[in-house]
Amino acid sequence: MVQKILKILNWEVGGLHEAAFLLGVSALSSQVLALLRDRLLASTFGASRSLDIYYASFRVPDLIFISVGSFLAVTVIIPMIIQKIEDDKDNGFCNAREFLSQILTVFSLTMVVTSAVAFTLMPKLSGLITPGFDAESTKSAVLLSRILLLSPFFLGLSNLLGSVTQAFKKFFVYALSPLFYNLGIIIGIVFLYPIFGLPGLAMGVALGAFMHFAIQIPVVVKTGMFPTFSLNIDFKEIKKVSTLSFPRTLALGINQLAIMFLVAEGSFMKAGSISIFNFSYNLQSVPLAVIGVSYSVAALPEMSRIFSKKNISEFVEYIEGAFNHIIFWSLPITVLFIVLRAQIVRTILGAGMFSWNDTRLTIAALAIFALSVIAQNLIQLLDRVYYATGHTIKPVMAKIVSSILIIVLAYFFVDVFNSNNLIRSTLEFVLRVGDVEGTEILMLPLAFSLGTMFNLISLFIMFILDFDTFSKKFMTTILQVGGSSLVMGFVSYWLLGQISLLFEIDTLWEIFLQGFVAGILGICVHLIILKLIKSSEFLEIERSLRKKFWKTETVIPNPEVI
Image 1 (tube, rainbow, N blue to C red):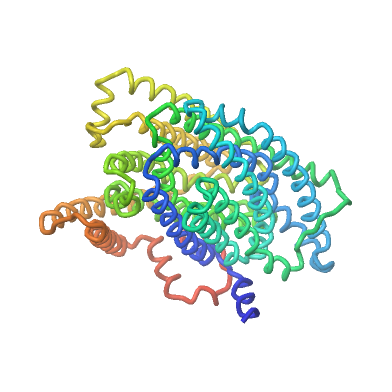
Image 2 (cartoon, rainbow, N blue to C red):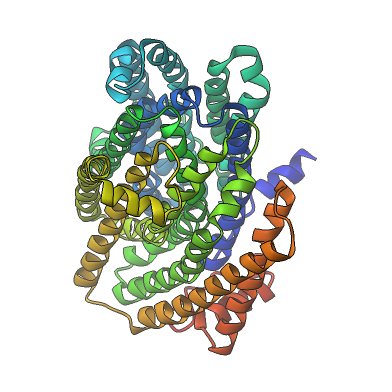
C-alpha cells in the first residue's frame, strides 16, 4: 500500500499542457477546499471584528515569509538546480544536493532570528498594521500573529522541496501541497476553534503549513536530493542566490506592504470591512490559482531549459503559446465572474452569521476584483519569463511602481468617495449597494485592480521591447475568445433572468442551480462558437483531452499549435 502511494506521488508529468492541466485540476480541488474554508469562516463569524482580527494577524507572518522565504523562491532556485543537475548527472547530483543543504542551513538560521525579533516586537507591529483597532482587538491580533510565525518557516521549507519536485517534473506531489494546507486550516476551524477560540484558527494554519511541507518529503528523498544541515557554506553560492532573489524579495515585499496599507485603511472602516476585502479577494483568486499559477509553474522548468541552450526564437515561441492559452482561459472566466457574481457569493458565503448586507458588499467587491483577473494571470507568466532568463530587475521595478500606485490610489479613492456625494452615489448605484452601510471598502479592490493592470501593461511593453516580438496570433486569440466570451456573458445573463421568472429563487440549492444552469449553457454557446471559428487554442486543447496525456512524450509547442 505504501509503495503504491509513493508511486503515485512520484508520478512524472511532461509537456506544458499536461502539467498545466494537472496543476489546474489540483488547484481547482485546493480552491474548493479554500471555498469550504471561507464558507465555514463566514457562517461562523460573519463579516465581524473577530474575523478582521484573524485576517489582519496574517500580515506580519506573510511579510516575513516573503522577506526571508523568498530566498527559497522556486523561480530563482529551479534554473540553478536544473543547471547543476545537468552538469552533475554522473556524480549522483552531489553538488546539487550540497547546494540545497547550504540553502536550507542559511534559511533556517535567518528564519529563527527573524521570527524571534518579530515575536518580541509584535505588539508594536500589530499597532502599525491595524491602527483602527481597539486595545482588546489589537491584543488578540498579537497572539494570533505570534502563533502564525510557525507558518512562514514550514512554507519556506516546502518551497525548497518544491523546487526539487518541479525540477524533476514531479508536479503531482507539488500540486497536492495546497490541498493539505487548506485541510489544516479547516481542521482548525472545525476542531481547534471550539477548544481554543481564535488562537485555534491560527493553530490550524500552522498545521496546514506543516502538512504543505511534509507531503513532499518522501518524493524528494527518493530523488536523492533531500537536503540536510551543512556547516560547509559556500558564501559565493549564497551570494548568487541572494542577488537573484533580492529583486523578487523587494517586489513581493513592497506588494505585501501595499496589502498591509489596504488592511490598515480597512481597520478604520466599519467592523467586518477587512473580512469583506479578504473574502472577495479569495474568491477572485480562484482563477489565478487554477490558470495563471498552473500555466506559469508548468512552463518555468521548460523555459529555463530552452533559455539555457540560448535558443531565443524557441524561447519566445514557447512563451507566446503559454500566453495565448492563459488568455484563452482567463477571458471567459472573467466574464462569468462578473455575470454570476451574485450566485457565486450567495452560494459560497451566504450562510449562518454572514448577513445580506455582507453578501451584497462582497458581490460588489468581487465584481471590481474580477476586472484584474486576466492581468493577474498574465503577470504570473511574464514574471517567470524574466526569472528564467535571470533578468529579475525589470519585473521588480514594475511591481514596485504598481504597488506604490495601489497605495496612492487607495488613499485618493477613499478620500474622494467619502467627500464627493455625486461620485459615491453613482458608484453605489452601478454596483447596486446604495442602501448598504460601509461601501467605502469598495475603493480598496478598485485601487488594487487598477494598480495590477498597470503592472501587466508595464511588463507586456518590456517583453515586446526586450524580445522584439508581437505575435499577430495574440490579437487573433483576443478577438476570437473575447467576442465569444461576450456572447457567452449575454446568454448567461439572459438565462439568469428567465430562470428567476420561472422559479422561486430562495434556497441555497435554487441559487446554485440558477447560476450553474446559466453558466453551463453560456459555456456551451462559447465552446460551439470557438469550434465554428476553428480557434487554434480550442482545437489544441481538444486534441490534448483526447489523449492519455500521461503517456505522451514532452513536446515543445510552437505558436501554430498552442
